[in-house]
Image (cartoon, rainbow, N blue to C red; front, side, top):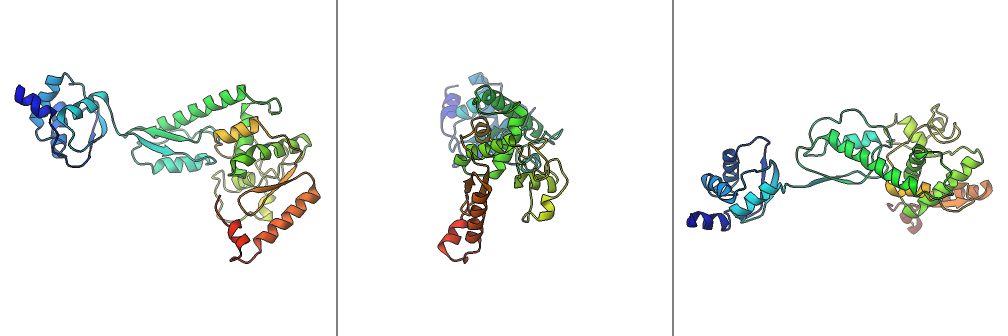
Length: 315
């Protein structure tokens, strides 16, 4: 017994970290065989003895990463506590449901199908942690729950100058804002522009809504928009229809939701990309047309000019 306790506590044979997957339903004897096969332990029968001596016979299945020279005692303790490997997947802001599902399909460690396709705008973009063998359907349910909790919390604390009828409208407008800019400081300003246009019964004229329409809700377009695109008949084409689109065009992040529920104070009615990742705003159409002309001037500068290089820098 004294010899066994010494062996259980001494450093193990592995000179480097060892990854081992213990399937559900694996017996203690089979666990010992898997650990010995992976060189995490020296003896499977000593492993069985150690579990009895330690009183840790309830071992949890999963994916484990045992440190180098981990002792039998520490390996058994990790498995008793279920200290499995934690994996993660990051869902970026502005992805459509189509894009999220495509990402989950290639995420290693998840199992099963997605089940019912979630509604657009119902998934909260953020980093999610999971264990080997977790289902894609369960992860999507977590994303939906996270979005519901987030919009409920933000709606309760919305600003009085956020003229929205309900939480769904907030998600719809936030999805448009999300696809319009990647600069956090601009989101509340762009939200204010859209609010101003809605008050004056002006069409939103948002390019991302057209992209959503012509891409069959995939949100991906490998070419610039054309005049024909802007004329396409779709309830999501805000160049043709009044007000908000009938549903979200992507899954907006918390920052965009906050922006539409706490819009900036502004009289601006227009904005155009400035060629450097941001936008130039205007109150009048004539001012906006000048900004558009300036933006086109930046676009046609020589490719090797400093200004053109700045315009092409990622944002």
